Image 1: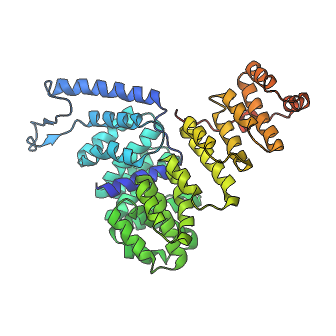
Image 2: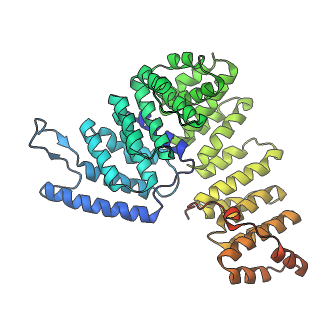
Length: 443
């Protein structure tokens, strides 16, 4: 499997799991380390204390002279690499972590699938490993890989939808007509437009990698919803390789303006995962009027890879009326990944009322980890009404966790008695609605 194909599969996982975090942090890493230690010991015993990682020879087959990897050890090591990457999605890191598995032959892919089924329980690691392995299998037998995805895994789950997409992309890259026929006549109908659109996107990602002109010609036969999904797929299929990206960018000049714009936006959004610096450099090389929609497409993606660069790009050339929304997006998204760095960034921005939304969002994100700091940020909101709302929100959330500490901090905040009374007596929303989604935000 080449690097661009691996990139497409990993990008698919990122699309399904919008905010991707590997295996729950430290616990996942410890489990992976334990798995590596166990498999390494078995490997060394089986190979008579040969150095770890040195392949042994299978003396029972005609291929005895060919080096063979220990598949169980390879899976365990890949899990460790994934866990050690930390929190945020990093396509380049994933490419390195997953690359050794792309060298497995068909029989070894089956062995690796069995190992994943038997030993991997973390949903995110399952998604990554199954996506890659089933994508490899689909290159030689798309129908069999699809049958596995649909019979072995939970029907209707996000995992199943993501794996079906991985299979369809690989299948279409080798047999586009076979994949399209399965989609149009055999894919089970779950009654949702989303599944259909994901399938179209996946198939066209594979088609584009094989024959861009043929994929673009088929787009014209689709209805509007499917056409949009197909264009996104074409961009996905061309984003992982520099020559393919250039070919698609050049080709957009001869397409209808709306299609060309959509392809460029989708392309730069995917490009931002794999090489954000290159993507930003290309955006900046364009005429000013062409940059704005591309900055929007790339900015949020880059925030997941290089937050400081994503923030810089998002604010570059932004109109004053748009800055409050951009500040809020950057602060909340970055805070989930690295609260300290996000806070430092906020303190370096112009400290006007345009930051009020960012201060409020940042306070809510860090509330679960550092309620005292969250209260300070809430109090820094400049608009009086918004400040009262922000302080009230933090106080109510903190009170659910530790009523005594919340009350002591509020009392010490130096607020007027009437305002203290208002905050204490404000209607409290249900905890499940008031508390932000639980996510790991690193440092």
